[in-house]
View: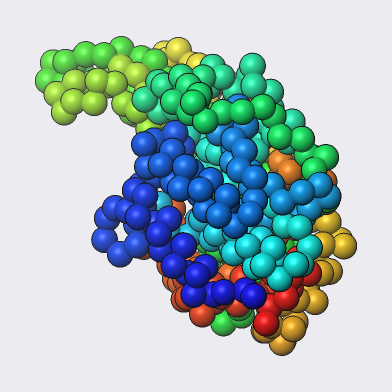
Length: 398
Ligand code: HGY
Ligand code: MN
Ligand code: MN
C-alpha cells in the first residue's frame, strides 16, 4: 500500500546527499560527488523495490518495472544553491508509487531520475539527449561556468554507465514537481494540473573592450566591459516593453567580469542571457532585439562582441488523456481545491514529450520560492501530491 511515511523518509534521506545552508538547502549539481552518491543510493533503493536499475551513457538513472510501464520521475541534481524538493519530489514519489504498486500486484510503474536537468551544461541536458532534442555530439563540448566540459563530467560516471534505455519500454510519462512560483501558495489550492510548459532560449554573450588602469584612464577613453553590460541591460529592458506580456521573463543570471578587481577597468564580460515565454514567435522576436541591442552597444562603444551557441526548448502542451486522469485524481483528493495552470519553469517532461504522452502536476511552494535554500512545501501537501499521482497512475492509494 502507498506509504507516505516511507516516502517522506526517503525524501529526507535524499537531502542528506549535499545537504547545505540553513533550513533544507542542498548543493548537489549534476556529476558532483553528492550527485553520483545520491544516484548510487537511488539505484540500490530501486533494486530493493523490485525494479531493474539502469544508468544510460549520460547518467540518467531508470528503475525499470517491465515493458509498457508508465514512467514517473524527474531529476535529483540541483542548482548550485538549491532546495530539497526541486526534482527530488518527483523522483521519490515515483519510487514510492512503483514500490507500492509492486507490493500490491498493481500496474508496472517505472522510475527515472534524469541527469543535469538544472542545466550545469545545457538546458535539461540528460532528458534533452534521451528525448532527441539534442544529440550527444553537440552536448559533449558544452561547458559549465568553470569551463568543465560535459564529456569530462560524465566520465566521472563511466563505471556506472550502461547502454541506451529504449523509450519503447514506456507507455507515458508523468512528472510531479513543486510549483516554484506563487500561484498555488497565494490561492491556497493544493494541486496544479499543468496544461503546458513554456519555451526557453539561453545563450552567452561577450563584450570585449580594453582592460586598463582604474586611476589613470580618463572616462572618455575607456572601453569598460561592465559599462557595456550595464547599458545593454537598460536598453534591452526598455525595448522589450512593446513585445512582452506579464508572463514573459528574462534573466541575466551569471556574469563573469575580467579581471574582476577594484582598480582595473574591466576588459571583458561574459554573461548568460536567458528568456522564456509560452509563444515561440515571441521568443524569436526577443532574440532579434537581444542581438540588435548587443550589436548597437558594441558598435557604439568600440567593443568586440561574441554570441555563444543558442540553446533552447520549444513550448510544449501536455497530453489531454493524461491531463484528464490527473484532473480526476486531483478532484478526488482535493475536491474544488485545485487548478489547471501553465508551467513557467522548464522540466524534463518537455523533452520526454517527443517520445510519448506526458503530463505534470504541481504542489504549492511556500512563499513561491525555489532555486534557493529557502525552498519548502508543507509535508501534508507533498502527501496530497503523492496520492494524486498514484491515483492517476492507477495505483491503490489505500
Ligand atoms: O530553470 C528551470 O526552469 C529548471 O529548474 N531547470
Ligand atoms: Mn526541477
Ligand atoms: Mn530547478
